[in-house]
Every structure is written in structure tokens, then in C-alpha cells.
Length: 73
Image (spheres, rainbow, N blue to C red):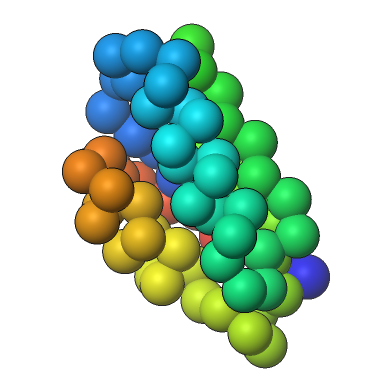
């Protein structure tokens, strides 16, 4: 299991959080998602044999939320 933290542009509303959490939660290989509204971070625990961090970043970007940086551990 791997973890990735995406640093985002500041969120404008709580519905942004729900939109990102919902989309990532439905992605194959994702085990856990936590979106931190006030710190503009998205934490994802995922199975790297099923999905890659870059694919998760692309999913977030397609929702209209630019990712500024990511850290995989």
C-alpha cells in the first residue's frame, strides 16, 4: 500500500471536498481518501499494483482542481 498527498490550490467551498472524495473513493485500488479543506491537501492510500499516483492526479485535474505538488510515500 502506498500513500500520496496532493497539495492543491485553495478550495473555494465544501462541495469541492465532496466531489474529490467521491471520485477518488470510486477509483479502483483506492483504499482511503481524506480531503483537508483548510490546508488544501488530499491524502490517498492506494494499491500501487492497481493504480498509480499519476492516474489519481489526472483524475483530480479532470474534475477541474489543479494539483500544485504531490508527495508519494
